[in-house]
Length: 442
Image (cartoon, rainbow, N blue to C red; front, side, top):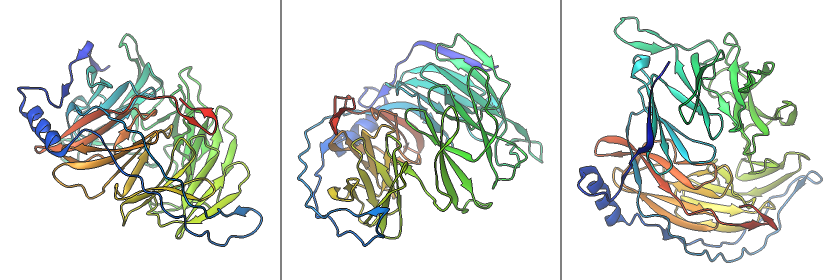
């Protein structure tokens, strides 16, 4: 079905600093001039703000205490980026669950299906497999994936192709299951295009093509061929252990409509948490709590009891959790990140590290960057297991955000360099044993 090329052993990746290549020399010069090697950034303790009054009973407020001084150890990630190759403006990337492989869908959104391409690289940048005629790739687990080709129809003029979209906003597709070894290719009788995988074989997919956009439905498919009964909601994200699924329920049609959250368990799809009056949802690593930004405050909600902790914070709306159960709040105007414990005490601050945030699934790695990227080198601030360091991108980032592997050990990003968009990958510090709250989380 697909024109598949497998490279045994993988093609060697281009690394920044490789000789006799114009692009490599350009990258090397940028990295030498602007210090791509990681350097330690200061983490500045600050005084905790006073908690705001809250209603008695179900809501608690933090105590005001002076945060401890953070003295990070030194960590020196590799000083070179790996260049995976040029891509189109609509390229997308996804790491395998174990972070050992990166899939890149590099073809343009328009054009015939034969012009589309998905490639798989090792974490070190070696090309493993190319799949011509595929629009997207979905990892089922570490050794299997599904590639889908979107349905297309001729444009009115008949000189090009356009993507077909059904009433619910879904792009119908044909899907094929393939093993990473390339030895097995099995067409599927179900459309897994646009699906959401838990990394352990379960895929949440949109069903009911005739449903309105404000009444989405989903089912969960497994490789055994089972498909759960349709259920109301739009799948948004799986928990790191694959046992919970976050759903959104729009209250009306349109992209600006409020969507209330629900979390269901897998495989029974029973409600674990819901809030019909709520909006955004940012679960912690273990999915026992979630946080959201209110009017000048951050609210932490216990998903089982519903108890809330509120504390004042100047947040731009971007909140993530780290593996120690701390809440990281980004302030867009000051380009600083503030770190709070679950009682709302300010324990750490990172001044002028960027005004956007993303975190790995396991919370061991957090990346902050500036939204207004320059055409030249740009900084990425990387916090990994207690160490805050800086990486320099040799060009302007054009991907929506840096893409971290689930374990936070690798980072991929698309940058504009010499008038072309290229994918760069970077291996971060090796994972080490980290103890948090008396538990080994390595």
